[in-house]
Image (cartoon, rainbow, N blue to C red; front, side, top):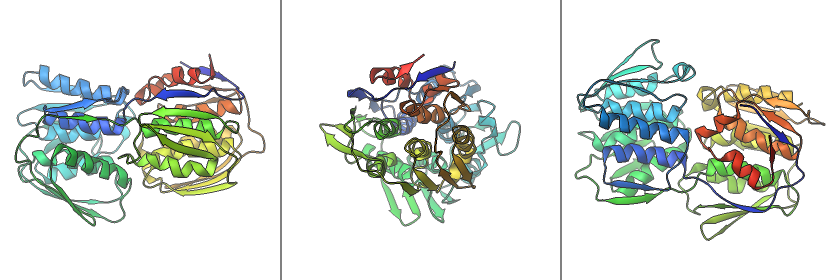
Length: 412
């Protein structure tokens, strides 16, 4: 389904309540499957989180028979469930996904789990899903990984670590990519009551002595989803104001870096009663340069905001974008150039020079990637445009188009 966005001059001041963080929710769903005494409040309503819920429901109804689970486009689910099923003693599972998912590498995680004793084999192409996982007790406890691999590989190992007979000693070699997501995982483990220890690039998760007591964890709203409203306010007129809830000043989410980053785009953020109020000011730079290795999911939003404001930008630390739902660097280059920008990419960077005039009546291709649709929609404050396969937003933010209508977007 394609949708057309008519050009608008401004948005209405409004309060939007965003669903819980997909990243936090998916970690907690895995921990809840291992430790049912955990209760989750304000969990994400995203497709990715629903995939996780359905996978765990399949286990409960399978009566120890081999099962096949299709996680579709959900990369987080593929990584986390690979680790989860590896330690389900006596359970055999085939884990598969969409055609794109079957092109996304998983060998690094599989080999790490095999170091712990896991029995995992490839059904088709070596190094890629589908996977056949024969669950067993995992007695190994030492793994070494390159630190610049996807943080989801690392988090997958950390999440199952308390359940391992001997815990886990994880050594990361080199500079860590997406460190906030690793820290989020450790913080959630600590909140539940598991013991962890970090010294430089060496992480220890101790085996759980007892099941955690009954505990409820409330998930903070999703900062990645909030990023599109930062972009909308940045592209709006002076004085525009949007309120978003529920957010914490001491967030576990790395994308909360938006608060500082978007000052460069004229957006001031104020925390009031678990909400954030975004206001457009007159402050704006002409060029921005960011190192995003800690927050790569913000790259598309920042690039589109920069383009819409006529600002040049240089974004670095983007090496993980090549193995997302699509190659996000190539996708960004393709769509921004259609709008008139000059864009250069490397394996881990994007440099953009904006157009003197933005090309209108363009259809933005989304490449089965929710963040392409989510990030480009705010450009309706500058030009009319069309978003292809707009339903892809359900992967992380199912109510996006309805929420945009609430603040004045014209959507057909």
